Image (cartoon, rainbow, N blue to C red; front, side, top):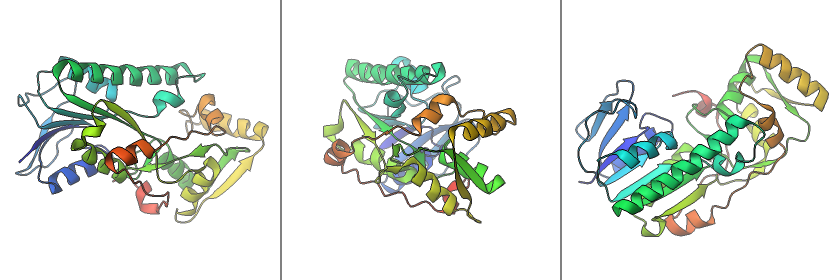
Length: 286
Protein backbone atom coordinates (compact mmCIF):
# COMPACT_ATOMS: atom_id res chain seq x y z
CA UNK A 1 0.00 0.00 0.00
CA UNK A 2 1.43 3.36 -1.00
CA UNK A 3 1.64 6.21 1.49
CA UNK A 4 0.96 9.93 0.99
CA UNK A 5 1.54 12.98 3.18
CA UNK A 6 -1.05 15.69 2.48
CA UNK A 7 -0.78 19.32 3.54
CA UNK A 8 -4.01 21.34 3.48
CA UNK A 9 -6.00 18.13 3.83
CA UNK A 10 -8.99 19.78 5.50
CA UNK A 11 -9.18 22.53 2.86
CA UNK A 12 -11.37 22.84 -0.20
CA UNK A 13 -8.98 20.92 -2.48
CA UNK A 14 -7.55 18.68 0.21
CA UNK A 15 -10.84 17.07 1.18
CA UNK A 16 -11.75 15.65 -2.25
CA UNK A 17 -8.10 14.78 -2.83
CA UNK A 18 -7.97 12.63 0.30
CA UNK A 19 -11.20 10.91 -0.75
CA UNK A 20 -9.59 9.96 -4.06
CA UNK A 21 -6.36 8.80 -2.49
CA UNK A 22 -8.24 6.52 -0.11
CA UNK A 23 -10.40 5.16 -2.93
CA UNK A 24 -7.17 4.39 -4.80
CA UNK A 25 -5.80 2.33 -1.93
CA UNK A 26 -3.37 4.90 -0.51
CA UNK A 27 -2.58 5.19 3.19
CA UNK A 28 -2.86 8.93 3.96
CA UNK A 29 -1.26 11.05 6.66
CA UNK A 30 -2.73 14.56 6.73
CA UNK A 31 -2.17 17.67 8.81
CA UNK A 32 -4.80 19.99 10.25
CA UNK A 33 -4.82 22.70 12.90
CA UNK A 34 -8.23 21.51 14.08
CA UNK A 35 -9.12 17.97 15.24
CA UNK A 36 -10.22 15.61 12.46
CA UNK A 37 -11.58 12.08 12.53
CA UNK A 38 -9.38 9.44 10.92
CA UNK A 39 -9.46 5.69 10.48
CA UNK A 40 -7.17 2.78 9.65
CA UNK A 41 -6.04 4.34 6.35
CA UNK A 42 -6.31 8.03 7.25
CA UNK A 43 -4.14 9.41 10.02
CA UNK A 44 -4.65 13.03 11.03
CA UNK A 45 -1.86 14.92 12.78
CA UNK A 46 -2.39 18.20 14.62
CA UNK A 47 -0.13 21.06 13.63
CA UNK A 48 1.05 23.29 10.84
CA UNK A 49 4.22 24.53 9.20
CA UNK A 50 5.06 26.68 12.20
CA UNK A 51 4.58 23.77 14.65
CA UNK A 52 5.17 20.55 12.76
CA UNK A 53 4.46 17.29 14.60
CA UNK A 54 6.87 14.35 14.28
CA UNK A 55 6.56 12.74 10.86
CA UNK A 56 7.63 9.41 9.37
CA UNK A 57 10.96 9.56 7.56
CA UNK A 58 9.57 8.62 4.14
CA UNK A 59 6.41 8.69 2.01
CA UNK A 60 5.68 7.52 -1.52
CA UNK A 61 4.26 10.97 -2.30
CA UNK A 62 3.86 14.39 -0.70
CA UNK A 63 1.02 16.62 -1.87
CA UNK A 64 0.54 20.24 -0.83
CA UNK A 65 -2.92 21.77 -1.22
CA UNK A 66 -2.15 24.65 1.13
CA UNK A 67 -0.08 27.86 0.90
CA UNK A 68 2.76 27.24 -1.53
CA UNK A 69 5.30 29.55 0.11
CA UNK A 70 4.92 27.85 3.49
CA UNK A 71 5.19 24.41 1.95
CA UNK A 72 8.27 25.39 -0.06
CA UNK A 73 10.02 26.58 3.10
CA UNK A 74 9.23 23.36 4.93
CA UNK A 75 10.22 21.18 1.99
CA UNK A 76 13.55 22.94 1.61
CA UNK A 77 14.47 22.25 5.22
CA UNK A 78 12.48 19.12 5.94
CA UNK A 79 13.91 15.69 6.57
CA UNK A 80 11.10 13.67 4.96
CA UNK A 81 12.14 11.72 1.86
CA UNK A 82 9.82 11.04 -1.07
CA UNK A 83 10.23 10.25 -4.76
CA UNK A 84 7.19 12.38 -5.72
CA UNK A 85 5.97 15.88 -4.88
CA UNK A 86 2.84 17.60 -6.22
CA UNK A 87 2.06 21.11 -4.99
CA UNK A 88 -0.66 23.62 -5.77
CA UNK A 89 0.18 27.21 -6.56
CA UNK A 90 -2.00 29.62 -8.53
CA UNK A 91 -2.26 31.42 -11.86
CA UNK A 92 -2.07 34.57 -9.73
CA UNK A 93 1.66 34.14 -10.30
CA UNK A 94 0.98 35.53 -13.80
CA UNK A 95 -2.15 37.64 -13.37
CA UNK A 96 -1.01 39.68 -10.35
CA UNK A 97 2.70 40.19 -10.91
CA UNK A 98 2.05 43.48 -12.74
CA UNK A 99 -0.73 44.61 -10.41
CA UNK A 100 -0.94 48.16 -9.15
CA UNK A 101 -1.62 46.74 -5.68
CA UNK A 102 1.62 46.05 -3.75
CA UNK A 103 -0.03 43.25 -1.77
CA UNK A 104 -1.02 41.47 -4.99
CA UNK A 105 2.47 41.87 -6.44
CA UNK A 106 3.82 40.45 -3.21
CA UNK A 107 1.57 37.41 -3.56
CA UNK A 108 2.75 36.82 -7.13
CA UNK A 109 6.35 37.12 -5.97
CA UNK A 110 5.84 34.59 -3.19
CA UNK A 111 4.24 32.15 -5.60
CA UNK A 112 7.16 32.46 -8.01
CA UNK A 113 9.72 32.04 -5.24
CA UNK A 114 7.78 29.06 -3.88
CA UNK A 115 7.73 27.31 -7.25
CA UNK A 116 11.43 27.96 -7.83
CA UNK A 117 12.27 26.66 -4.36
CA UNK A 118 10.25 23.45 -4.76
CA UNK A 119 11.85 22.66 -8.12
CA UNK A 120 15.34 23.45 -6.82
CA UNK A 121 14.91 21.33 -3.70
CA UNK A 122 13.47 18.40 -5.65
CA UNK A 123 16.33 18.48 -8.16
CA UNK A 124 18.93 18.58 -5.39
CA UNK A 125 17.42 15.45 -3.82
CA UNK A 126 16.74 13.50 -6.98
CA UNK A 127 12.97 13.79 -6.42
CA UNK A 128 10.29 14.59 -9.01
CA UNK A 129 8.12 17.69 -8.46
CA UNK A 130 5.06 19.00 -10.29
CA UNK A 131 3.42 22.39 -9.71
CA UNK A 132 -0.29 22.92 -10.43
CA UNK A 133 -1.72 26.42 -10.99
CA UNK A 134 -5.52 26.60 -10.75
CA UNK A 135 -7.44 29.56 -12.08
CA UNK A 136 -10.60 30.74 -10.25
CA UNK A 137 -11.45 27.94 -7.79
CA UNK A 138 -14.99 27.09 -6.65
CA UNK A 139 -17.00 24.11 -5.45
CA UNK A 140 -16.92 23.86 -1.64
CA UNK A 141 -18.08 27.27 -0.50
CA UNK A 142 -14.63 28.22 0.78
CA UNK A 143 -13.22 30.32 -2.04
CA UNK A 144 -12.79 34.06 -1.69
CA UNK A 145 -14.36 34.94 -5.03
CA UNK A 146 -17.53 33.26 -6.29
CA UNK A 147 -18.70 32.10 -2.85
CA UNK A 148 -18.19 35.62 -1.53
CA UNK A 149 -20.22 37.02 -4.41
CA UNK A 150 -22.98 34.52 -3.62
CA UNK A 151 -22.94 35.46 0.08
CA UNK A 152 -23.21 39.19 -0.64
CA UNK A 153 -25.99 38.65 -3.17
CA UNK A 154 -28.00 36.52 -0.71
CA UNK A 155 -28.04 39.37 1.80
CA UNK A 156 -29.13 42.09 -0.60
CA UNK A 157 -30.86 40.30 -3.48
CA UNK A 158 -28.70 42.19 -5.98
CA UNK A 159 -25.07 42.31 -7.03
CA UNK A 160 -23.60 45.36 -8.79
CA UNK A 161 -20.93 45.24 -11.47
CA UNK A 162 -19.29 48.06 -13.39
CA UNK A 163 -20.24 48.29 -17.04
CA UNK A 164 -17.74 46.54 -19.25
CA UNK A 165 -16.94 43.73 -16.78
CA UNK A 166 -16.52 41.25 -19.62
CA UNK A 167 -12.99 40.00 -19.19
CA UNK A 168 -12.80 36.27 -19.84
CA UNK A 169 -12.60 33.77 -16.96
CA UNK A 170 -12.20 29.99 -16.56
CA UNK A 171 -13.62 28.94 -13.15
CA UNK A 172 -12.38 25.51 -12.07
CA UNK A 173 -14.11 23.04 -9.73
CA UNK A 174 -12.23 21.63 -6.73
CA UNK A 175 -13.14 18.08 -7.74
CA UNK A 176 -11.34 18.55 -11.07
CA UNK A 177 -8.28 19.84 -9.23
CA UNK A 178 -8.27 16.79 -6.96
CA UNK A 179 -8.48 14.56 -10.05
CA UNK A 180 -5.55 16.44 -11.57
CA UNK A 181 -3.32 15.97 -8.53
CA UNK A 182 -4.05 12.26 -8.39
CA UNK A 183 -3.43 11.82 -12.13
CA UNK A 184 -0.07 13.60 -11.89
CA UNK A 185 1.30 11.17 -9.33
CA UNK A 186 1.80 8.41 -11.90
CA UNK A 187 2.51 10.57 -14.96
CA UNK A 188 6.28 10.78 -15.63
CA UNK A 189 5.72 13.46 -18.28
CA UNK A 190 4.79 15.89 -15.49
CA UNK A 191 8.11 15.63 -13.63
CA UNK A 192 9.76 19.01 -13.27
CA UNK A 193 6.90 20.90 -14.88
CA UNK A 194 4.24 23.45 -13.91
CA UNK A 195 0.73 23.40 -15.39
CA UNK A 196 -2.09 25.91 -15.58
CA UNK A 197 -5.39 24.28 -14.57
CA UNK A 198 -8.25 26.34 -15.99
CA UNK A 199 -11.86 25.23 -15.88
CA UNK A 200 -13.59 23.60 -18.82
CA UNK A 201 -15.36 26.72 -20.05
CA UNK A 202 -14.23 30.24 -20.92
CA UNK A 203 -16.86 32.93 -20.34
CA UNK A 204 -17.11 36.68 -19.68
CA UNK A 205 -16.87 37.84 -16.07
CA UNK A 206 -20.41 39.23 -16.26
CA UNK A 207 -21.83 35.91 -17.46
CA UNK A 208 -19.95 34.01 -14.77
CA UNK A 209 -21.45 36.21 -12.05
CA UNK A 210 -24.91 36.02 -13.65
CA UNK A 211 -24.85 32.21 -13.45
CA UNK A 212 -23.92 32.36 -9.77
CA UNK A 213 -26.77 34.75 -9.02
CA UNK A 214 -29.27 32.69 -11.04
CA UNK A 215 -28.64 29.53 -9.02
CA UNK A 216 -29.36 31.15 -5.64
CA UNK A 217 -32.70 30.68 -3.93
CA UNK A 218 -34.28 33.10 -4.51
CA UNK A 219 -32.20 34.21 -7.51
CA UNK A 220 -30.42 37.52 -7.12
CA UNK A 221 -30.37 40.29 -9.71
CA UNK A 222 -27.26 41.53 -11.47
CA UNK A 223 -27.13 45.31 -11.86
CA UNK A 224 -24.60 46.97 -14.17
CA UNK A 225 -23.70 50.50 -13.11
CA UNK A 226 -21.90 53.35 -14.88
CA UNK A 227 -18.41 53.95 -13.51
CA UNK A 228 -19.33 56.90 -11.22
CA UNK A 229 -22.28 55.06 -9.65
CA UNK A 230 -20.29 51.87 -9.21
CA UNK A 231 -17.46 53.82 -7.56
CA UNK A 232 -19.96 55.36 -5.13
CA UNK A 233 -21.52 51.97 -4.36
CA UNK A 234 -18.08 50.44 -3.84
CA UNK A 235 -17.06 53.27 -1.50
CA UNK A 236 -20.17 52.68 0.60
CA UNK A 237 -19.61 48.90 0.66
CA UNK A 238 -16.02 49.38 1.79
CA UNK A 239 -17.09 51.81 4.50
CA UNK A 240 -19.53 49.23 5.88
CA UNK A 241 -16.99 46.41 5.68
CA UNK A 242 -18.76 44.45 2.95
CA UNK A 243 -16.09 44.85 0.27
CA UNK A 244 -12.94 45.68 2.18
CA UNK A 245 -10.97 43.06 0.22
CA UNK A 246 -12.09 44.33 -3.21
CA UNK A 247 -9.34 46.68 -4.33
CA UNK A 248 -9.08 48.86 -7.42
CA UNK A 249 -6.76 46.34 -9.10
CA UNK A 250 -9.39 43.61 -8.73
CA UNK A 251 -12.02 45.90 -10.28
CA UNK A 252 -9.72 46.64 -13.22
CA UNK A 253 -9.20 42.91 -13.83
CA UNK A 254 -12.94 42.43 -14.38
CA UNK A 255 -12.33 43.95 -17.82
CA UNK A 256 -9.21 41.90 -18.55
CA UNK A 257 -9.04 38.45 -20.16
CA UNK A 258 -7.37 35.97 -17.78
CA UNK A 259 -7.21 32.88 -19.97
CA UNK A 260 -4.87 29.89 -19.72
CA UNK A 261 -4.16 26.89 -21.94
CA UNK A 262 -5.25 23.49 -20.61
CA UNK A 263 -3.72 21.59 -23.55
CA UNK A 264 -0.40 20.68 -21.84
CA UNK A 265 -2.26 19.27 -18.82
CA UNK A 266 -4.66 17.38 -21.09
CA UNK A 267 -1.74 15.93 -23.06
CA UNK A 268 0.43 14.91 -20.10
CA UNK A 269 -2.11 13.59 -17.59
CA UNK A 270 -5.55 13.59 -19.22
CA UNK A 271 -6.88 16.76 -17.60
CA UNK A 272 -10.55 17.21 -18.59
CA UNK A 273 -12.32 19.81 -16.39
CA UNK A 274 -16.07 20.34 -16.39
CA UNK A 275 -17.88 23.40 -17.80
CA UNK A 276 -19.17 26.04 -15.38
CA UNK A 277 -22.63 24.91 -14.28
CA UNK A 278 -23.01 26.26 -10.73
CA UNK A 279 -25.63 24.98 -8.31
CA UNK A 280 -26.80 26.62 -5.10
CA UNK A 281 -25.33 23.91 -2.84
CA UNK A 282 -21.73 24.51 -3.92
CA UNK A 283 -21.77 28.02 -2.48
CA UNK A 284 -22.70 26.77 0.99
CA UNK A 285 -19.58 26.12 3.06
CA UNK A 286 -19.25 22.38 3.74
